Image (cartoon, rainbow, N blue to C red; front, top):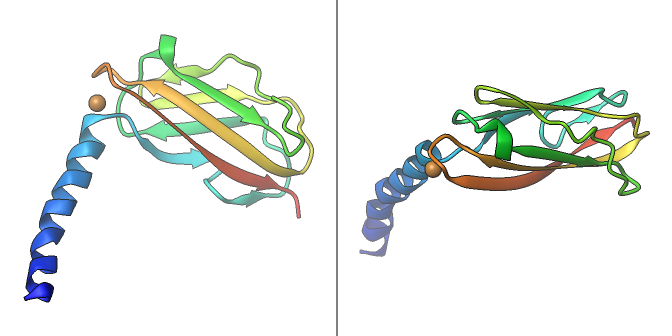
Length: 118
Ligand SMILES: [Cu+2]
């Protein structure tokens, strides 16, 4: 009986997850890729979202391993894509924090890391 009720829940959970993903702008993928290691410091970070963004209220902040902010502060939005240029930040773990307003007026945010060097 326990096993049956667990299987019964799976379609419901999938429905909830899918419904949420289509209702707001969530991070689809990024360059440099989430959690990845790149050989040299990138000159910009680009994020792709699941919905079209409102440029005025969408931002990316990037800090280097020393915690210094290395993004230029001017995020560029094109459709569901957003980029920001970076100053040289050296090696180590970079933190990317994003906050976006999608065209359906919902705000979402999140963060991830990638590594430079080693
Ligand atoms: Cu939404």
